[in-house]
Picture 1: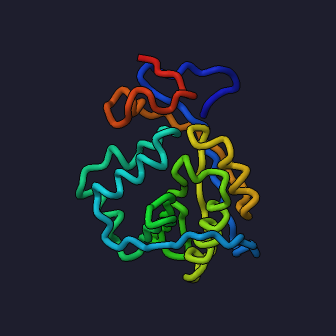
Picture 2: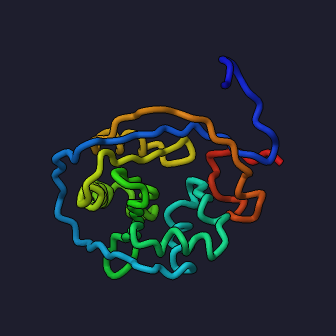
Picture 3: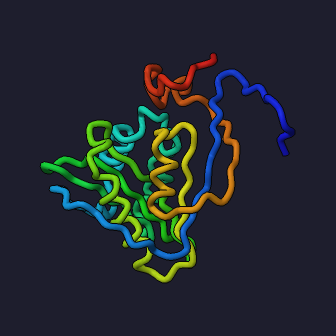
Length: 195
């Protein structure tokens, strides 16, 4: 257990405050009518997936999927109880939604994000309505998600406005993906690199 005060982060690592949130019933959400469509990618191609994961998450130092070997990533993405969705506009994938039903009576919003050009255009609200609909299409007791200080500063407020309630916080320390070679050194300019 951490004691109150400052705690030095080892060089070569990044630290983030992780906030866990959940909802136990679907809220009523109104969505605007966007010229976009949702597409489910069953047995998603791994190279395609990694490219979209980077396009959505590089600015925020999303790195967890980039460490996974092909077989480990395929085990997740190709599971019958795991859904990979994209929102598409003009035939292009511009947003990623991952719905994880692998744990009975619970569902995790494992990943959720837009490419930078789509942020602030209303697509996130439509994506969240779709995610909630997919989560509660099965009998579950809770739909949960976590966000962190490496994500967009808008993420936590967005999730609470969507109907999620914060339940706990944790500190995560991990190797800096810009030093491990998983992300370019220029990514995540809002987080300094300490070699």
